[in-house]
Amino acid sequence: MTAIEAWELRKTYRGNVRALDGLSLRVEPGTILGLLGPNGAGKSTAVKILTTLSRADSGEARVVGVDVAREPDRVRRSIGVVGQKPGLDAEATGRENLAMQAELYGLVGASRRTRVEELLERLGLAEAADRLAKTYSGGMQRRLDIALGLVHEPKVLFLDEPTTGLDPEARTDLWREIEQLAGDEEITILLTTHYLEEADRLASELVIVDRGRTVAQGTPDELKNALRGDTVQIELTESADGNAAAAVSRVSGLSELAVDGRRVRARAANGAAAIPSIISALEHSGLAVASATIARPSLDDVYFQHAGRSFQQADDERTEVAA
Amino acid sequence: MTPLRHTWQVALRYIRALLRQPAWIGISLVQPVIWLLLFGALFRRTADIPGFTSGSYIDFLTPGVVVMLAVSAAGWVGMGFIEDINRGTMDRLLVSPIWRGALNLGSVAQSVLSIVIQSVIVIVLSLAVGAHFHNGVAGAAVLVAVAALLGAVFASLSNGVAVLTRQRETLIGIVTMVTLPLTFLSSALMQQSLLPGWMQEVAKFNPVNWAADAGRSAASANADWGLIASRTGFLALLLVASAAFATRAFNSYQRSI
Image (cartoon, rainbow over the protein chains, first blue to last red):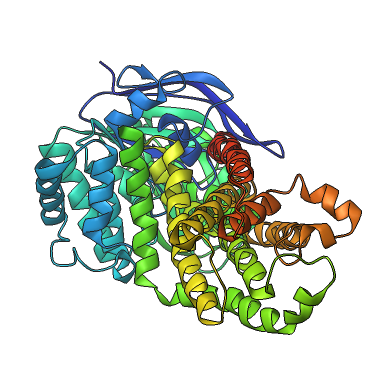
């Protein structure tokens, strides 16, 4: 049975804000699916619909084979959710938080106590178990949130931007934790992120979302290999937007040319062979080159290919709108 | 069984938070105590007004103050929901298989508990300044129960409004606009037969007045048990309606996110 399936999910918020515009995805059991997209792409809305928190205007979704709109309570029993905002009760201790969550899923008495202790131990919270959650560090709070999502041993775990706001060390710790979950416990994980690095490292399968739609799905390697060729990046000694673009566009065999300040980026079937002609074209126009690099396609390139703009640019645009 | 267990879990959460800040009960007692001691002393001569047949003013006022404290304490209960929604705790509960009614009823249970504690303190204080409870502990217990019932109604309404608006400012505005007029349009501070005619008419439909009448009757020498039963019944019906409203408010919230 497929762990998660969604067809053509659409949702428009009040004020005509279109969050989802036909998002479809499919997650096989035991995998980590990364839902990758810039801020505002519709990732969180998708998670809210799949976890029965919100409802789609149209489309259909099933989690562990159960329709989320028709039988939300059955879906709720088999999923764990770690939302973008902390779900923990800051005025209660870690142990109290877990005990309440366990009760809500019907775990009582000795089995509840055992499970709570197990999770405290597993997520490194045993020592802090009797402290109020509001005294926890950011990383500890996130781990408690994950523990809350795992109390009832869900088949599917949703992690909405799990590492946002964490310092680099806490982020790496959490990555290890997530990898372990998928490895040992054979749990299916759907993880949303707007960090390319995180998606690359954790996800066995990626769905790239842009403006509420699925623009690509595949393993990170598949997606990268589908982009034949290398990325060539030239750094100029000084910024020259128009001139540089005009100069490089005369070189044949290049695609996806982008100039941003001192940086010129393009795709070439053979990067090493293209560099001399690019440099000579630039110098011919009186532009001095500071450095040149060739890179295998990255997820950033994959996103660029499918969404028609760079990931960073999309992320920034959206943040500006939000601000 | 499950509804009860879930309600208890939610209640336990709020009760624990309350017990961790017991000073809060003291702070919320300041107002009722001022009403009881200062207002009671200020208007002591009310008892001399021709047609005032309720004995001493402090006897009359005490049930009114108990009812008032229930309304004003319960009005703010929705603040907890707004906080839970903003923090994300509510969303976590909503994606769990929790019985939906437990969210409101658990929070109401905490509010009722704190109203009972405050009412008992106010009653003890009123005895110290000379108030009489003619039917002893039973009368006082009915007063507390009626106040708690009224508090449960207002706590549910507050929760429902909180979920629908999700704005502290809006909730503060509504609570302020509703509670004071409802208190003045009741017999909480003045014998009903001495109110202006139109106020007496309005008071008939005012739940605060139902509770004040029933609570006062229970404490008086000639308690009217028929009136107490009917007013308690009205309040119970209102509680069912307001709890349903608060629980259904989540549907609207979930559609909007």
